[in-house]
Structure formats: structure tokens, C-alpha cells
Length: 100
Image (cartoon, rainbow, N blue to C red; front, side):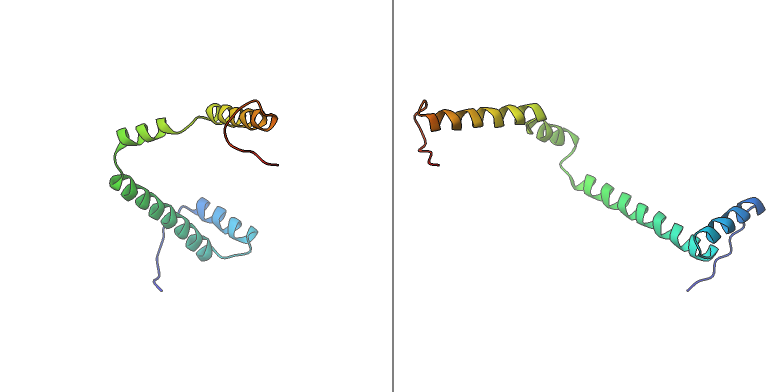
């Protein structure tokens, strides 16, 4: 374990001390938790940037997104499928044999 000296204004030190007391922990533990959060955020950002660089590029991504159905298209597709199944069950549409 490594010791680290941090110079803080007195006001900030008092506020951190009060925060540590409300959380029933020490100032050292607060700094350890803050460092963990900052490093986790940094790691996530680094992973995201690496994955973005390996990707196919923004133009290809936009084309892929355009191929996805919108919410309304999905609802319409489900409604049309349900209507077809009902029509087949009623004998109005030839096609697949639908059994209940």
C-alpha cells in the first residue's frame, strides 16, 4: 500500500470529514471509494473508445440503424400478423394450416 499526501483547503477538509462521519467511515476510505469510481469511469470510457475504433465507422452504423424497424412499424407488423392469423382461423385466407 502506498501513502499519498493531499493538500486541501481547510474548508474542504472539514466538509470531507463531516461527510465521512455521516457515512461512518474515514476520510481515507472516502478517498479510496472516490478513486475506485474515477478509475472505473476511466476504464469504461477507454473500453468504449477502443470498441468504437474497432467498429465499422459511423456511416455503416447509420445504415444498420436505418434497417431496424421503428416502434410503429413493429406494432403495425404485429397487428397485421394477428389479423392474418385470425383470418386464417376463420377460413378466409388460404395458406398455412392453423390448428387450435
